[in-house]
Image (cartoon, rainbow, N blue to C red; front, top):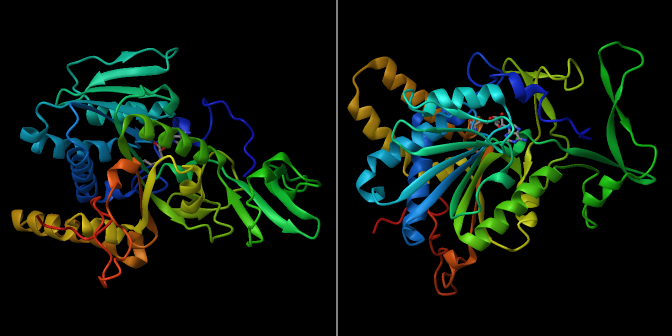
Length: 379
Ligand code: SAH
């Protein structure tokens, strides 16, 4: 969608708590604790595989209510003996004042007052309940360029897209205009001539409608640059496609589809993430793994074992039902199992010397050395 540059003070994400049953949409960490726990294990596994650095930053883009980070931190605490000499810090990239307050409530120790400075790129600082320093930023650019693990869950789908349509005169951008017929309503119009954003379209594009999210490209370039310079990894999870879908831009309000042109600023606007574009934007600076479907990723991370452990721990019928329903929601191909995908960016050295392709003498591809992207290899 043509995005008129809106300062980061207004708009749907700025003052809403849109997540959860009462809100406009619900995300995996809000559905089941198992989701965050398995992601926590993924980060620890990558930290070990990369040589157990003495320190790391965990950076989350768009942390919502902080639930996902809370579940990840619980795993870090449980693996305390492994991580005890590692200097961990948290860095949250969040534009919403309202959600940053909720994140602070979820994550920080009440007795340690939050430091606030609206003028500073680090607009808030605190300490988590387990004693880890946590800082808030509006922009990834402001996060210190140190050894980091990055997490973006349902972040890329909220970034604005440009829409294009092929016409007999070539590509034309689809713009948003005020509807002269109906008050309080917008309408789509085709740009009368070529617009600069057309540069985003690939020369060999075969679709006749295309959505491009340049902001996602900028974030991926920044992540790739950082990972190639300092190491670490990024884990990206979202609903999306591999450069094949056409018109996915839509709105949600109160868990129902909402006309994107009606009552602007009141609904969650979203577009499926084009994973092939994200991979292209890494410009070969890092290696990418995936996209792999959520059900495969979580199964590879051991969700079935985790479910069994949690079920064995409780006889409470409502808790057991909640666990089973959560598992079904995350894994069922008709629900989130196939629609959501995981993509990882890792330094090239991480895969160095490993052969990912099918070995000529083997019938099966060799397992990925990165957890989640291949079947768990028990050693
Ligand atoms: N990751 C969370 C929340 C996803 S909702 C979860 O899985 O539950 C999207 C999140 O991204 C919200 O926290 C929203 O406020 C934040 N966000 C939206 N636009 C952003 C931007 N341009 N920069 C940083 N955060 C943004």
